[in-house]
Length: 390
Image (tube, rainbow, N blue to C red):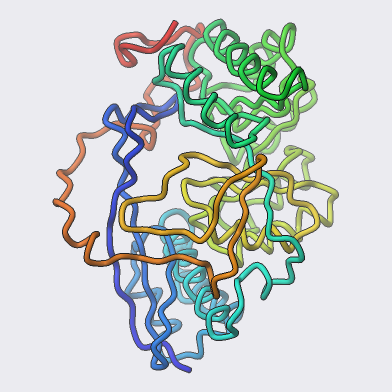
């Protein structure tokens, strides 16, 4: 079997409501969703989700190769780009191609990827994560009531701009999940997306912990600040989670060596091989791992095979347009299907018929605000976030 080419598509994920975090808001809830499809001479096509920056250069490392040599090809892609740097979006391109190769390998074996990777149980524990900073109180309660109907008993909220508002919103969600679980204590997490300084993080989390039990605080300071993350970890009761934006083991090593993180996270767009390697690094230091992402199906398959998986992020309950997934959610868990490969079906006709999205104005969750980490008070900028619930 040989790799013969690749194709790219872009669909959209319609949330039906505003989504965002401390860095910005997408008020229409329409998020572009890039897809990479890798073809072979035996008619098997693999699917990966993620960027395609410098994809021609990266694909040159695997063209004509046997796609079943996945881990060796992953390293070939890293070597192909080492001079210009394989971090950031280019690392996402490698991850998308890597995931597509794993899909091909499992399809060729006639097995779901979770079984090929050595998983015994096709269920993966989930937590709810609504990208919910733009929701009113009523919208927030409604969103997490829906998650609760699927059995989810842990939730991660977006915050960091207004501590009193964070406390209020966390309390609302705690009460929703407690009621659904007939009084059982839920897991509560807060993600501030690198918006604080070290001292702010310790002060603000300490303030929240007067009345709330936080399972973890996510990205309280900059992702690469090993010393700062360690300072936060020593100053609060909650675990410190980070890693979704780190690209490569070389970026994780300093954090692990400094004792800076309690939970290692990996983003779905960085690929299956990366997750497996980060999980092994974490396991060697008795740390759990937790995948994140809008559609993390590749990492869900991989999570079944690692001993230190904690829980995976469940964002929207609906897939992107034109994408069908062989999985469902029940009793607070992702349940993977038995389709060979990833269990992803892409309807190219539906996606190519979608109207072209107009380019977005600058802003949104992917653009760091000028004042991030330099706000005197954790009080929301109500001009930038008009309509946020109080």
